[in-house]
Image (cartoon, rainbow, N blue to C red):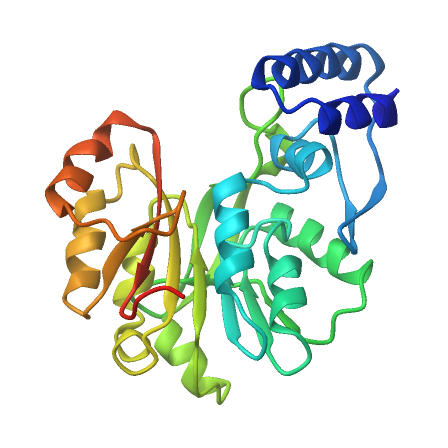
Length: 277
């Protein structure tokens, strides 16, 4: 039944039909409580739980988010050193590893015990030799403290209760991490840390100034931890300009971008100091 639904989903391009198939799938999953264990998608093997939203999207769509996925495909190139900050289960980690190839490297950061265990499991199912996994959090200071995290959401809505955890988390700045591990360049960053993006960037001043990486930024608008516009102002000070995640075109009206922020729950944007190619 799952393979049948997936084939139908891929066949229909009209959104209304896709929504119908997804709704039928959700009913089927609730009745059967079926969990798909292992599946290979675009050359990457995943351990997926189809009751979880991220896993379901990967299975049916081959990506977690269409525009972020497409932007990574276009901008993450062979030989790059790429960072996946907020890697979760690895929805983008392994795609980035494919793109940078043997001459490149992917460094993934995921501090939550629930998501990191799934990330590590997915790593074990593949044969990538160019990925480094880190169960640490990047921030604007180095410290260790107990934090409450939620790292998964269910298809039927709400948070996965098993993904809630009070973890002892090691925090470190990106600049300190790179120095400690002898990493001399960073070309590309995917950043999605549920409202803590500014703190991560504040801990990366040397990296932003010297490496000037392309940044795909995903942030939660309604986070109590920051004003989203502060991220933009911070990056502007380092010479960054912003591009649409949809078509990679330069956003010429910064005021229009700022005014549109609070009309949505999340914001995805690309930041670069050089024109995108």
